[in-house]
Image 1 (cartoon, rainbow over the protein chains, first blue to last red):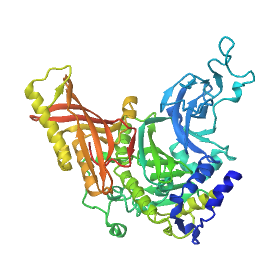
Image 2 (image 1 turned 30 degrees about the vertical axis):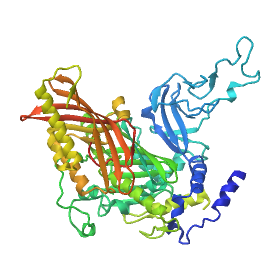
Image 3 (image 1 turned 90 degrees about the vertical axis):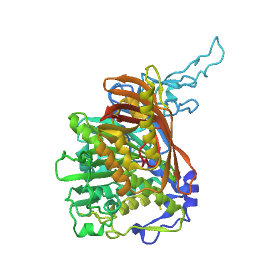
Image 4 (image 1 turned 180 degrees about the horizontal axis):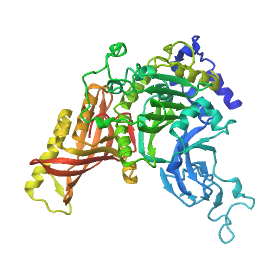
Length: 416
Length: 164
């Protein structure tokens, strides 16, 4: 309470705008005290944080290094098939003992003084614990069992591993809620995954702008000329913008439309009716999920985006660095039983995403420019009124309801 | 000039290779991206990826083009559909080195260092790494059948807009 009291005191001067959900004040993107509280209450609070895919750590000893909030962790497959998520910090002198992003080990040994840990984080031994020729060594009452690696709570569903620094009092299934669970299971049905590779980018903007970007279908139908032009995502497509009951998770759903000029495209000044692709294989989508949705973009509080855009699938992990910077880590995947042609199709469609993505460049640049504008005017508020001022689900894209839902939950968690 | 390591290469071939690389670099340095696909074969493979993926044999790439036409589509997108803040990408390319000659073409490698300059910002190192190329004779000219650009960093600062 004492530690929190100080932060609360400093935040006391922060007053959320009177319009409530219809405004987001710029200081939530810039204030270091807000950021510190986000790390404490959101990333190290009772949230299920996306950590890795089962397919990345198939056999015992296989590990994947990751960063959850401000803390480095290592997810490692146990001998019994379960997953342990360990803080990447030796219990002795706090050294980051694991320096590889991925690999396979029998045990973890810190290079500094060779303290050695079992795959589950238990301290197995340390050199010269009993000293040498009666000299030195650890005290008689030193208990190795009290000096293991810090271990997170872990859960997983259909090949996706989540961890938490504070054991959430809800299962992942309750955390997601029935509606979001349905969308999650659509991509992660239990069908084994194949990791196709990684993309990483550092974006000079607040991490929340990434979440808001994916919760904002209004921009998708205007900014992304590539998507609009080639009919992949347009406001005149049948669509939906939904959240879970709390508002913290969301989903955008689009169904593919025709590439025609109509009342909607007339308002899209950027629509390029005359553009064609020289090699149409660049998109060439093939239906592979039940139902008629071609795009499902899901945001899972607080650090995960599940992307299914035609046949391009990825999990995007958000790693906040400070108020004005975050890393975006893309793990691109397909299914282990994909025929070769589907695998190549996914690789081609991956051109649309990542740091050089024909669509994603727009978003990265927009976030950069948003943060620049925000930093230039902390006293200003963002207007979030498209589609009304509420947070109800909408059967269309002309809405910012999912952003309003996000901030309703955010304010409750942050005490703002 | 073109170096050669472990293979013999006649001076005339080296000159032709040097002209291929010089023409390629000149087109990109001038921002004449419309000319960029001309340096490739019809069914080329062009990829930009990270060392992390490359060394693990993971196939996903930031840029993955399977034909000259797909390269042209990249250029269309960067000209007509992509939003990005104004910038310059300065390419500093090492000497191409011929490392093998096989039935399917000549293998060359070339290091790159890219510096990015955003408007009213200082220049900064953007990416560095190495290109792994396969060059073939096609219609009386040398063309890239394959160019794989592997960045040393796993991480890209914001956006990679222009080709390497």
